[in-house]
Amino acid sequence: MCSPQCRRQCATRRRLHFLRTCTGTSNIYRWLLLPSGGSARLAGALLSAELSVDYPQKKGVLRDLRIDVFPGEILGLVGQSGSGKSTLALALLKLLSHTGAKANGRIVLLGQDLLSYSERQMRSVRGRLMSLIPQSPLAALNPALRIGTQMREAWRAHSRESWDSQTKRVTELLASSGLPSEEAFLRRFPGEVSVGQAQRILIVMSLLHAPALLIADEPTSALDPITQRDVLDLIARVTTERHMSVLLISHDLVSTAGLCHRLAILHDGTIVECGPPKQLLHLPLHPYTQRLVQSLPKWT
Image (cartoon, rainbow, N blue to C red):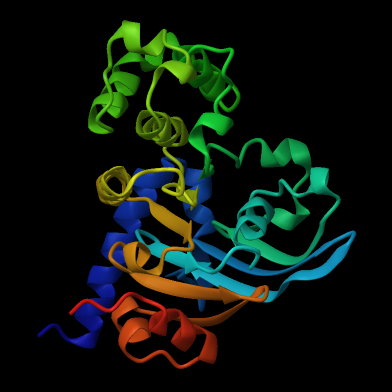
């Protein structure tokens, strides 16, 4: 067995590999190296948030919620409808302003507090450092634009590089996501593909800029069970291959537990319990988590 010092060194090397691969930007990499006693110390969490969110007609949608996502981790956020899951996703991306909601606290990504960022600064974060896979894929895609056009616009929104220079990379992303890479497929409209294909298209679009953190908001809610499994397997695979972190938001405790390194249980606007899936499923501590586990089907 490795000594404690050896384990720390191995963990540090894995994190450094993740950061270099994931960000590719020396300035971002330096944000994660914090001075401590004259030497560099690697910060633990990729994302660390403490949030409270109020809507004009509903206060306390999120209440002192605290959540951390670590490099290379898939963190599952599980809660029932109305518990604040999608509000958290929008708050992390600072997309709540159009709803009239107000967020207080801090959102620290790669060492920078995003709550202090202007809208112009956030455009350099969304899509590039932190990306969203929305729920309801056919609703998220513009029915009047071809798939290739929407992918090109998603690229141009966050990069000055030529879209034509990305042809090889886009072809590889499509192929690795189980989608056709031919021009004929990219010329289709969203209504000409299946719901499962539309969800995969959104995943490809979210990966275009190789973000450090992927927020998947109920990515399988509109899919049949077999396609759900395929999409979750795809998310797990690209996370490993691309050294990304994922915040997987879902109401489905079983499928989330089978994919994630840790589970966070959201209830009434706050995280009531967080830990490894095996621990939460076999020894839940909070009464709400206990009710969730008890509600799972029993197979005989």
